[in-house]
View 1 (cartoon, rainbow, N blue to C red):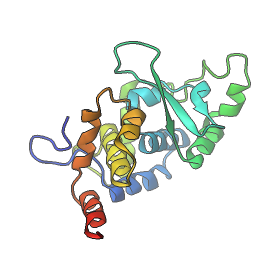
View 2: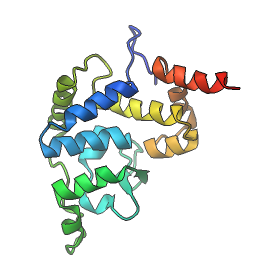
View 3: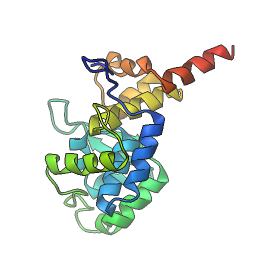
Length: 193
């Protein structure tokens, strides 16, 4: 896995691009906004977000619990801490608390009951509204942005590995190869010595 495509174009959003994406999401329909926020703040894959059900939104614990869909077997989950504002938005828009009070605890309520391509189009419209284009302007670009942001703010690689659901630490380590503003931020920490 690389952070640049074969032509050298960056495949992740910078901090300012991610911020522009979230700002554009504020103007989107509510369900699109919550999907955009979930991708940006959790680093999950689009298919993992679309499989999210109300029972896996832990409002008390402050985490979203994703089934890791690339593990070649069912039933492997990971909990990812997310901002309280995201949890509040998910509850408000999708009725999480109400669904969790039902007999099945919300297991039958998919938050975004759409196909993967529809979800991709929803995210891409927000990217367009934010003025973003190129390889980074995608759900995968948000996932990469999450990894780069986590590493550049000092989150230990083993936690980033856990949150992203990587089997190998070497996969997560690519996020230490950030460039641009992120690389400058990391370098500045060294210059203070």
